[in-house]
Length: 395
Ligand code: CTP
Ligand code: MG
View 1: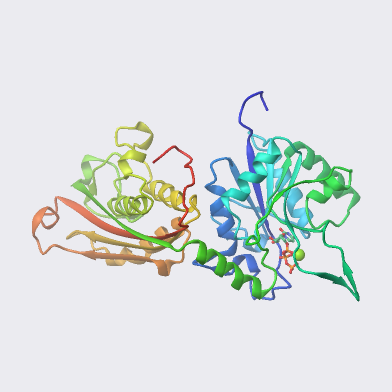
View 2: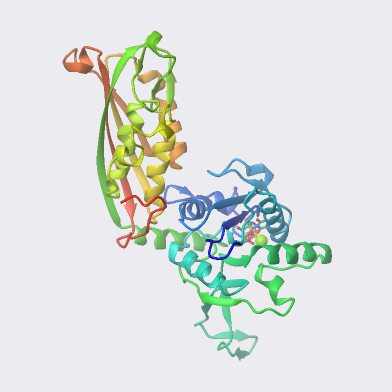
């Protein structure tokens, strides 16, 4: 790392296990938890963390497409899955200086915890979140002194080159380790402990999922609803080779919507609604129509950006509702395709997305087919203390 430059920090999320102790029909990391999978909670939080430049899920080959981010295949043991992740990162053009390794089965991590681990990495090669044990511990009939005992959690943080070298060496030695800090302990380096969080439990048994649901729902009690509205002009198709995009779907039609980006009126209204839930201004502030970067831009990128401002504050998208106002084209044949593409980009279940359409009975500009309008509302759940600084310096 050049002196004074910010370190490149990546996160590996290991989620290639089978969840045998949990015993559900699918591995525990894919079970639903407050409207998205257990795994997706960690991915959303890490992907929107301003200090992380890369988040790599490591999944079982059977579930390789089951996350929002491009994933790689894991191995038969956790250590193998970690090693594959480290090797993959070592081949990236911007090889990380630091890496966090997190269990996909721990959905309740917080941005504060991630920050504590990263801060300590500036001075230590190996950092673990630890919790002092409070229960009395017994081995058979004797009580175990708990003063020096800690429960160790993830994300654990490491200097990248060191952990990669140790993990490669361990693969040759073929030792069984349950966490990554053990690699440092084995060569006499004590991991540096930072405060873990009691809520940051690892889902192992069915009980744990109930606790995670309790923690996450009590943390996101600040329910907010906001609206968005947008209009774009319809122009004949032959004046422009663009497609008519509505709700993320290309619709065959004689007219297209005019605009700097792909002019997807429905996604713009919904993006504004999401921005409204976190008081982050409007779409023009984030994606100026004068900025050449957004010329013919895919409005799904705008939508994902707005959703990331919710997740970066530790929030969840609870519901999205869009009403498209036009005489033509007919929306109903495309309604479910729109719901699916919006849901996939918000990383929520399709049941949380609604798309409706109406005409204005021939009245007004929509009635005269001069343009298409869209209204949207978004409902999100946020922590009451959502003060997360934003990646792009937005309000
Ligand atoms: N893990 C992995 N690759 C493996 C085994 C485990 O990536 N071969 C991941 C799990 O998906 C989990 C984390 O490592 O996120 C911690 O492992 P654990 O809680 O033991 O999960 P499972 O191995 O899936 O559960 P079990 O041991 O009950 O089968
Ligand atoms: Mg296991």
